[in-house]
Every structure is written in structure tokens, then in C-alpha cells.
Image 1 (cartoon, rainbow, N blue to C red):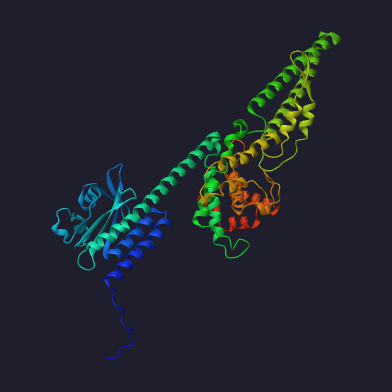
Image 2 (cartoon, rainbow, N blue to C red; image 1 turned 90 degrees about the horizontal axis):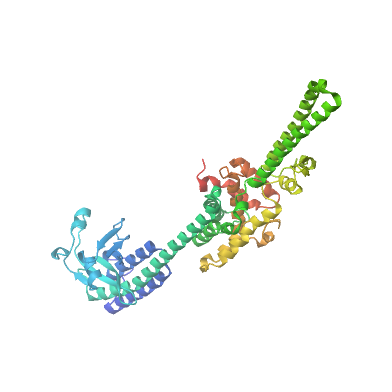
Length: 504
């Protein structure tokens, strides 16, 4: 009979087969050393274990010394976590004794738990369970293989599975340690954010929202196929680095004086209280001066003119007191900060020229030169000196983050956070660096930071700006060459705020 099929490859001899399996173990060992995700690593180990001993399926259990039990999040055919007390069942016995258990007939061994088979309909025939030992020789877990493809598991299977288990033990230990370090660092970052926000509770959530917005913008940029950022890509490690930089971008505010940090109006509360008392004294002075004039008028015009004198003085005093009230009302309006730069403070100079007599009869101005200057701040609530102090938080952040021994994958966190207030026109702070020196991650964070600062819930020093208005303000800054226009377009077109902050 003629056949066009190629002849089947001859089966490998036992030695070649063993060499092939050992080579496979060495290859997977290399892959295991590079894998840091615990679940992915366990899957990798199980897949190799099935091939090495030619089993139907395998399970891997890690020893939890604190609870004296084995746990497994990954078992072929299972999707939920399994926990087994040390000393219980076959896996627990191997973990306790450190001895290999090779069972040719599972149902003939009283240690075998039949409940799994009854629950799933699976039929376990043969079992090979070996300990995983670390470099010190201590048992760190067990690997269990079920149902050898060819009859029963032999001594060579035991040897190969033990060899794989030794490689797996070190890789799992490293992955778990990496996981612990990651969780430890996440806790440190969370504690740092709490420290930042405890200085100014009104900004609670800002750091987290900026991180969400910036990462979402980076993910949108990563999918671009046209434009200047089409070749810019962010891997998972890049996004972690960006998230840390964004979450910690304001940590330096711990170095800013709290009164400046939470300043709600242009004048501090105690300064405004002194100003109010000054106006109260001025009112009393106007009233006292009115009674002096009445007395002098009566002396000059006689008591018969008292009614006319009172009427004249009442009208004059009323006008003078109204002028004071209007001046104070204007000052209180000027004291409120604005999101956008505004003018119209010229009247303050005139008010500053008004005088009254204090309790010692000495002339005093209603407004000091410093108060006129502070109340004339065109945007926000901070004076030039106070703004410099606030701006110093970026340098404080950089110095703090530079003290952390970042991994190679996270080494740019300080640099990214350092540049989030720089502008493309070179007029940002703290270094006023040109656009080409600003990392793209910092450019994205700048957009996110301003957006959240504008739209965040009402704060003592500002009202929340609606989403469309915030985009308009950002658009003007991008058009003026301060923010990256191409990144802003992605921010808008990809609806980053809606996706990142779950806006409706």
C-alpha cells in the first residue's frame, strides 16, 4: 500500500529521553529565575512538571510556616485556593517528613483522600508526591503528579521531579520575596500619601486621582498609531514607575509651612481679624469726631440750632460710615482668590490713603502698603514669597525620592516627579527647563495635575470648576505653549477623565 506520509520518528532511547528532560528542566529554570509573578511562575512549574514525568496533571503546594499548612492558588483543574494542614493527606505527609511518596494504586492507600474524585468525577490511579527543598535543604513545598501516562511513576520520575522541585523552590522563594517587597513598598507609598494629605485634608485623594489620570493617559498614548507619539510605548513596568511618580509627586509638601499650604484667602485669618478691628476703631473715630463737631457747632450756633446740627451731622456720619462699610466690603471681595488672573484692584490704593485716629490720637492708615499688595494678588491666594515656598515642594519631593534605592525599573521616579510643574515654554518651576528636557511622563502628569486641581471638590480657597471649563483652561495653556498640545488632544479624545475617574 502506497503512502505519501513521512515515516514516524523512531522513539528516543532511555538515555536520550533522560537527557532531553534534564535539558528541559534547565531551560525552564532559566525562565523561572526571570518570572516575578507568583501565579505565572506556579503555572510555568506545573506545565513543566507534567512534561517531565509525563503525568495527566500536577499540583504544587507552598509551605506556610506561620500557619503550618500548605497552600496552592494554582492546581491544574482547580481555580480556587487549596489549603492542607502539614501532616494531613499525602501532600501534608511529604511536607512533614520530607520523603517521596510514590503510590501505584491510589485507592489502595489509606492516606489518599477520595473526596476530590467524588466531587469532580476524576479518577486518580497513580500518585507521585515529592518535596521541594531550598538551597539549605529545608522543605518549602511539594509537587504532586497524578496518573502517569505510562502505567506508574518510576524512580527516574522521582529523580526528575525532585530536580525540578529544587529549581522551583528557589524561584518561588524569590517570587514570594519580591511579592512581599512590592506589598511593603506599596504600604510605604500609601503611608506617604496619608502623610501628605494629613497636612491638607482638603486635598485628600488628589495624589491618587492624578496617578489614575496619568496612567490612563499613558495607556491611551501607548495605543496611538499616528502623530508625534505614535512610537511611544509604555510597558507594565513603565506604568508602575509612572504611577509611583504620580502618587508621590506632592510628597515635598511636608516641607512647606502648614499656614501657607492651607491658605484659603489672600490674608491669613488673624490678619483679616486685625483689619476688621481696625475698621471698627475707624468707625468709632468717625462717631467721636462727629460728636466733637456737634459740640463745636452748638458753641458757635447756639442750642436753638441743635436740631439742624444733629440732622446735618447724622447725614454726614451716615455717609462716612457707609464709605467705610463699602471699603470693607470691597476688601473682603478682593480677599477671595480666583482661579484665573483678574484685575480691578486699583481702588485699594485709594482706601490705603484713608486715615483715622487711634486711641492715642495718632493717625493710622486703613490699609497698609503690604495689605494693598497682598489683596492685589491677581490669581490665587499666595504672595510671590508664599508661592516660592509652595513651589519649593517640588525640590523637596525630588530630594526625598532621590534617597530611596529604586530598582532599575523604577529609577526614573524622582526625575519624572521633579518635572511635573515645568512648562514647555521654559517658564515652569523649579528649574525652568526647556521642553526637550521634560520627560514625556512629566508632561502627561502636568496635564493630569492641573485638571484635578481645577475640578476637585470645593476647597476653602477655590470652587470646583466644571469639566468643560477645566478643559477650556487646559486648552488655553496648551495653545499658549505651556502644556503639550498633542498630549492634551489625546487626553480629550480618549476621554481620559471619564475612564480614569469613572465620570458620567
